[in-house]
Image (cartoon, rainbow, N blue to C red; front, top):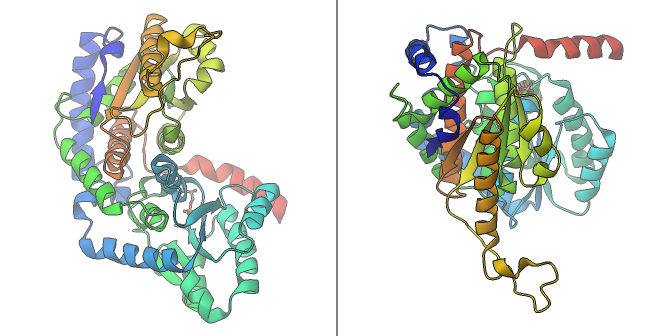
Length: 420
Ligand code: PA5
């Protein structure tokens, strides 16, 4: 894993770098010593290296029972209880095995009704995930999906087909699981939703989909080890936190997380949620937006190139191609593309990235690139840990508590009083 900052360096003043480098050491120590705000929620910090074989095996066992008996699994959850698994499943792009259908991440009846239609005639299982056990969106979807499940399966069969992932010993979902004898996985109290991708919250749906979660954890351990030092050249997550903080102080208040890989779409969505909910408080915070290029170069590309200069960009790149398609030659060459005949789309895509990152830098948009070696579970584990670690530092650099989300309650309060 590498962070290339060469297209951001010229925007960064040496004095700023030196001063934020000193501040980040303090933030690193706050994380390690648990002396900062929100320190009750630091269970994720050394989770990868402390994940034991037994807990991975339990997840794999439950997953393989679902894989052997079902064609589809409905994964119900929202926010941090949903996006990590979706990111991994879309990133790995597994087309064989159990189909994962996501529900409970919105309240749109069209969406849920279409998903239920997709499930007709299929053997299904459900994994409902909610740390609090009381979030309305997943709770409502769970009711609807269970209604369908009860029509298809008797109580004994349901016990094998429903798994609840929630907090141990408390909350509505825990009680429902105990009352009905459903499977149970626990979310540690000291890990907030958006930091839970490397717990059973993310790992169980990934394992059901057929992702090698052992490799994913190994990748996360590798990133955890890289995070031990405060030396920016050895610890890319520290460097990322420092650079984005300096850029923010310079007035670059919008960060576009971008990639030329379609498979990164939900990794970026996961990143967006992690950063927005962790940093956007007390009247502060970098606005994280996402873009998939070259698609979005034909949409917000104009704004990035020439709009208000309050943007910086972070690209997610994959070094090695997993597949490629060579551009065919064409006798009439009416589209004039024969100069590229025989070249792989991966080469063209790479040149598009190089051309874009240079143009954006020249247009006043500092940009950095986080590259991983390949599209694998290991590399995704690295990415997950990298961003979690960096947002902990980044939140403390911003002097906010990165581990709470008081603002999320406002819409819930209004919605509930309207509903009641
Ligand atoms: O990161 C967070 O804490 C949130 O995004 C939660 O994950 C989200 O609100 C869902 O909460 P719960 O798992 O309690 O249903």
